[in-house]
Image (tube, rainbow, N blue to C red):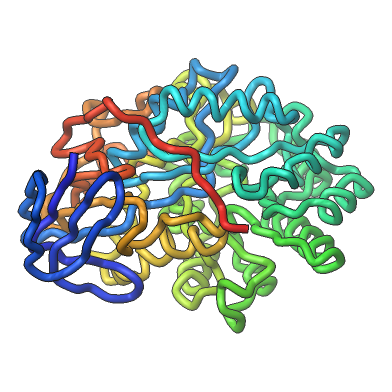
Length: 445
């Protein structure tokens, strides 16, 4: 089906302009004022609404295969498109982890059958799969990157062997995305706290996974990247101290070291553990308010390059264990754009900047082919938003398989009205069209 979106405010490449957008055969055919359509097309009157490029989320955990009691690619991609996220890049910590090329391709096969959004999957790393990791060099146009957990307690996903890290950074030709926390510092902090407290609480989480732990690991990753000239992307920066490691003096397209910030680190602080407890337990931890303020400043001045979610669903039962047993991670992909539109309304960030950090910059960082912008000839991955139609997060409108959100009860001032993926209106006014599936993302490397 073809569409003509009429009388909309187009937010793209640093400007807001009024006009029409014509979608034909899955792509943006034309952008102009008063487009006269010469073929059959469904007209959408978008007067008073804003048209944005679809969000590209470069860090999600959709749990399939192996952890499908928490989530599936189908359920979380459906939640994503309802939130204006048209493309995602998913992490390797499934069961089994994506440690071989065959296991990696298995995930692509699942997504091709079930995902309503476009997709890519990171190759996983361990202390003993370097040969498989380097095979990904042959897939530079087909795989978003290689993921290293430099600090983790998740099975054998932790890479803490310096020789292996050196080989990965020295041999990988794709973007390397890192989870940077220092396992030894975490263990020492935990032991010290347990020696003085009988029962640990969620508010202890940022003490155990503190600022120093994040800084030391990020610093180490950057040293490896500089030694080898690697393309490094550090995920979910959460501390003020780490920000000294990044620059805004180089254009994004020329940076070899880039950084991501996640919506929960921009929204919550350690003050929120009192009310939310394990609901906001995540790694790296949500920390003291000075860190949130510094992250906002670095986002606005371009030391932080992209906004993502680190969407990580767990069941309600898994989150409601005692602190030490409670699983770490928050479900966020349905609400990330809405949360940033809230901050647009608050005057914290401009609509143009949100689009830059959630769409343009992600496409630029990863060299995503023909997505992330509203440009003629590009895939029609688009989201239409009403900045004046509010809605409140509730059990009834949460689409995550886990069925809960740390944002329950929060009222957003804006709403996602329509989402287009490859020219198909997969979501419109709370109705889904599941007749089409997303596509495997391609990269221009």
